[in-house]
Image 1 (tube, rainbow, N blue to C red):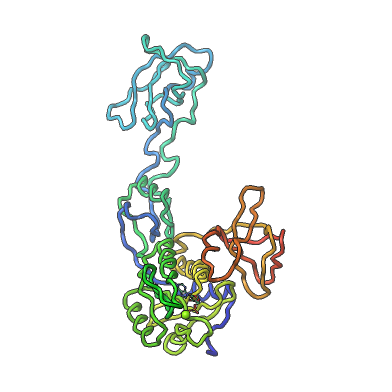
Image 2 (tube, rainbow, N blue to C red):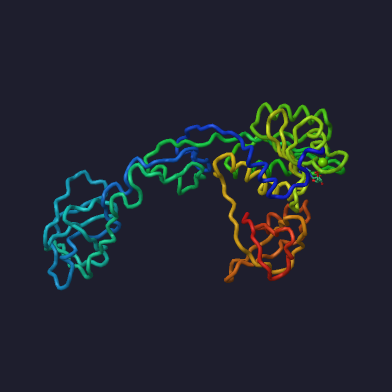
Length: 403
Ligand code: AMP
Ligand code: MG
């Protein structure tokens, strides 16, 4: 394969992926279905937020100067509730309105005192203010957002708070990127579905379930196929079906150097490979290319590796396809609490537990780091990003990706 970029560095792999993202159109979804989707257009507010000056406290509204000491009790003129359809009366000198949180501020009033700092004389309908009135308990019209202002930008991952903000801005439906349908195809003669009877030398197939969950986590739609045996003909048939039904294909297994690594073989002979092998550890075997015009990642078969490669390569590729949107990776700086095996040429991604109880974040190994050991990934809340050449010694610092 002389022309195929082979054994590329991690930044080189990202560069190749980011220059050929998926093209995803826009669809409108109701807010009930908007969680975890990715905005495909900027969203303007249809209203001012707040829509009108209102109280942030249950209490009394009055003229600030009437609360300066010494002052007589104020006469209670009215009660104003949130959502009232009554016209409020203007507050004059020596007057106050009983007011609820979210209720409009009557004209003339410019300060609030919460109910617990007021002494009410119900018989005489007066209130004694025990403190100076607070102007900051009035939420001003438009102080959060002005009508027409863009509050959520194209590419925003719709989290619970941003879905709420879409509603605050008055949008019953929002424009989002169409979800990519992502086909997941495991390969290997030894693989059987959990629940089935295992013959000697067979194992439960786990990657397709883990990867399907990663696809959902990233805001897209998985289509999980039954695993395919190690046969070029069966593999070709399955790849053809997946290419018709999906926007992107993720295979697992069969991309290393072995004789039965048929995904690599079929992609070499009949596909179009853009890179094969990346200098990351674990997870160095992956390939990226096209099968019948459909982009395809060949992920490693080892369960921990396939997960890590999804986070490191598929995640950035999907984000590049949605203007940077989707579930985001968070990086933090950690200090190594023990020595880790690093590498001169590879970016090393050790599974770590991050201790957050001290001033600095301390990284501990989750134990045996075999690439087949999914449990060590379950125990991890991060991956080191030990740059090529990093010593990995106890006490040194590195970036880490939070999982
Ligand atoms: P391969 O990349 O096909 O050589 O597989 C590497 C290792 O991962 C082997 O031990 C396989 O049995 C295991 N493996 C491959 N695919 C899966 C899968 N879908 N689920 C669980 N283990 C797998
Ligand atoms: Mg295999």
